[in-house]
Image 1 (cartoon, helix red, strand yellow):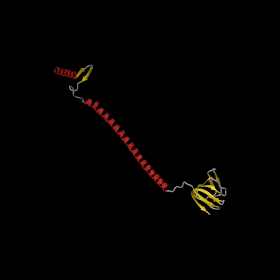
Image 2 (cartoon, helix red, strand yellow):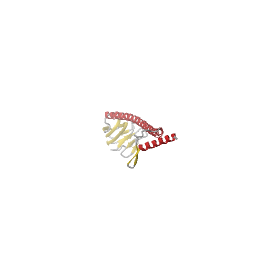
Image 3 (tube, helix red, strand yellow):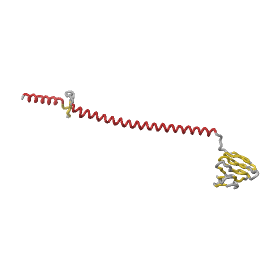
Image 4 (tube, helix red, strand yellow):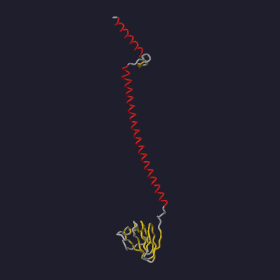
Amino acid sequence: MIKTRIIAAAAAAALITSALALYVQGDELIYDSQSDPLVSLSYINDVVVAEYDKKLAQLSDTLAELSKKNTALENANAALQTALVTANAKLDSLEKQLAELKSEPDSSGYEIVCLKSGQKLLASEPCEMILRSGSAIIVSITTNGVNDLSDGNELMNTAAAPLYHSLLVPRGDGRGIQITSGEAYVMVRGGHQIVD
């Protein structure tokens, strides 16, 4: 009986202490942690540890995602470095070619030559010829002729070379023109030789 009264008194004291730990501020019930600082082990296990584990999992996921992004950036950087090396090599090659072209004499202009009867003007490389005066015939020891760029046709061996037409020999294989008049002037551009 005494034990029952002690237990009842202890329960009442606990109830009063809990009631004092809570007080009303306005319409809200406020918990006063200063009067009840104790936290149960189940609260720590169920709430605090669970929240900690959740945050830790989130941080791990974020770290894994950042690691993936970092790897992707490193791969992209490596690809850019390779592309940069290739581009620099191409640029060096182009600069070298440009320097070589600048050092070569300008071959875009025409040379005017005066030829006598029977002389041949033969291409030693791709060559363009324009008969300005006199007369000439086509010379071709191959099955191909000389291209008449003005008319868009091919002139075969011994055909008459027309005046003021742009005649093209695409390869240096001995094709060209032979003068049939006493004298003729020819504009020529490209490698050629004059044969008597």
